[in-house]
Structures are given as structure tokens and as C-alpha cells.
Length: 450
Image 1 (cartoon, rainbow, N blue to C red):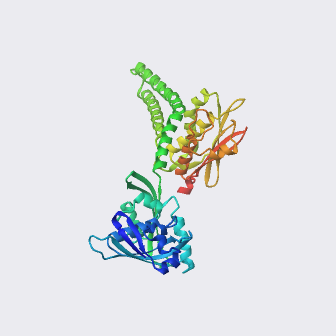
Image 2: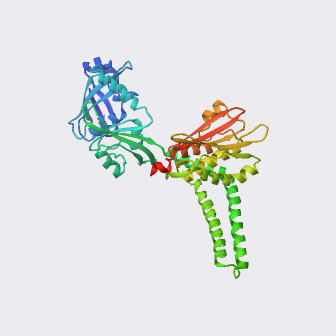
Image 3: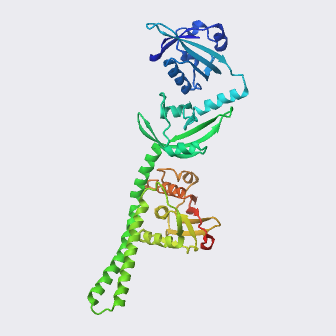
């Protein structure tokens, strides 16, 4: 096949085909003369390969590669192609010699590869194959959209990632891709693979999470507003007690400073310092509303934490006319992030307070069960419960059955649990209430850590 036209502007037509081309494709010369060579390509044709061929030919270099073409009857076939620019005068149109060979039935492996390549071109993740020297071997359609198709495109991995890959190790992390529409946040996984010929390559799988990150940020902000009332109600109540105690202690000291002995003064000052520590803890609890990009896992004594959480939510529970029953937790510890666990439990209790109930008194129970490797903390309400469909959608963003709900509390609780290596489960029966269970890794006994 001979092509003729202006390659740099993309205005190229088929000028000549030989009988072998007709036998291969079903097209006669009259069918395609003057037509674009695009008649030979279809939805399974790899655009990255075609774009690479155009770049090579525009640079005056020959191109050789394999691609899926389409016959006149619409059937795909696998083509080994070779294209080379022919010498022409400066004022003449460019001529290209294209040699095509049908290799569809060459080997079963080739047929399998055709289907694999076609499938990869339709997945949402960006897939790139790099040679060890980081040159591009393959991009699927999603990768083309993210990274572009210009010469010399670079995969934006951090320096430490390349060092890790040079040692034959895999790498997983985040990266930023600069595109004409703005920076895109990517989750990237890279590992070394070997082809049929044993030659090593780097397989890059990238997922665009820009919109997910933006929605998560919005969800965190809305959830803060949604639950802040419950939290601040407890904060106001709990701050009032230590402030009153401090005021009382200092008033007594001021009135009796000349008559109290050193031990008595020391005792009152210790009381004041103890109340100040309570205030410091309450203020630090406000951080539980910050977004947890990362968590710091350490040992948390569960009975202590539950007492503190209950103290925070008790005023809001009482004002809502709800009875809160806390089963005495076993003396166990969990491996978790304290701030994240505070927010999880606050979200679950807030959700239980707002759970609709048709009649009777509303009761919320907090139960704890220790297993061999995990500890389950359950927040149970006796509300209306959820249908099977509602239960399936309960952890999806913005799904809610409440008139004024946002549908974000459970979503964020689920994310925070996962960030700590735990999980959130919902069990519910219509008319019988809902059980929300967060499971976290159980900390070893103190003697086991010695």
C-alpha cells in the first residue's frame, strides 16, 4: 500500500494497493483510493500504537509494529506492519510505503495477545508498560488521556520510587500528573514483569482519584457540620465541671492562703492541676474532627477511651430523650489511632440518636466483645431499622433515610476504620433496630510484649 499526502497536517490518502492487499482486507483499489487509511482501523485498534507510528514517520523514521486492523466485512485481524517515508521533492506531497502482513492465525499466543490488548484498552485504569530504561512500550487509552501522546512523555513517579524499582522491588504510592486540564491526583502501583521473551519491563497501573479526593474533602466538611452540635454539647458540659472546680479551689485558697499550711495549699494546687489536665484532654479531642490523611497506631486502653467518649456524648443523649446503656467493657486494649476512633464512635452514636423510632422509648447500647485477634465495639439502637436495600446502600456517600441527614457519617466512619486496619459492619432488621460494629486489632497482653 502507498499513502500520499501531507503527513504533518494529517491529510493523507491511500494512493495505491496491490492484489495481496485486496486478498487480505477485501478492499479493491477503487474502494479505498483517495480514502484515509483510517478505514482500516476500528474500536480495537490501539490508538497509542497508531500515534507512535505517526510520530516516527513525521520525524522521517521508519515504523514497525503490530496492531489490530479491520477487513471490509468488519472482521478484525492482527497485522504486522512496516511503514517507511519515501524520498520526494520539497514541493511534492509525502509518500509512504506501507507493508502489511496478516498474522492472525500465526500462533495461539498472538490471538490471545490480541484479545488482551483490546481488553486493556477499555479498562478505566491507566496502564503503561515501560522498558527498564523508562521508555514507553505501551499505553492504553486511559493512560493516553492522562499522560498525553507527545514524544518523550514521563511517568511522574518520585525519586525514591525509581530507586526501589531499580532494585527489582514493587512500589505503591501517590503521584501528580500535570495535564492541560490541571493537575490530577493518581494512585499508582508499579511492579517488574517479564514478557514471553524473558525481557524485564515495568508495569504501571494508575488510577485517577482526583474527583474521589475532592468529594472526600467535601464529605469531611459536611460531616463536621452535621455532628458538631452533638460534640460541642458534650464539650460545653464537660468544660463546665472542671472550670467550676478550679474556680472553687482558687476561691478557697485566696480566702485561706494565710491560714492554710503548705500541705493544704499543695493539695488544692494538685486539684487545680488535675482539672487543667481534664480541660487539656477535652480540647485535644477537638482534633478528632480533622481529616485523617494518615493515622498513628498505638495501644489504646478501651475501657478508658469508652468512658471519655460517653462523657462527651452523654449531655446530647440526655437532651434527645434517649437512654444510653454502656455494657462494662472487658479490660482489653486495641491498636488504633485515638483521634480517629473518637470520631468513629461519635459518628455511630450520633447516627443512633437520630435513628427514627415509631413508638416507645429509644435506647442506645454500647457493647464490647473481645475475640482472639480483634475487638468488636457495637453501637446498637432500637429504632426502625433498615430494609435490605437501605442496608446495601448505607455506606455509599450521600445516601440517607433521614429528612435532614447528609449520608456521610457512616461513610467517614467506614473510611477511618479501614485506615486503622479495621472494618465497619452494619446489621439491621426492619422494626428491630440497627447494630453498627467496628472491629479493630486487639493489642497483645502486657506480658506478651515483655
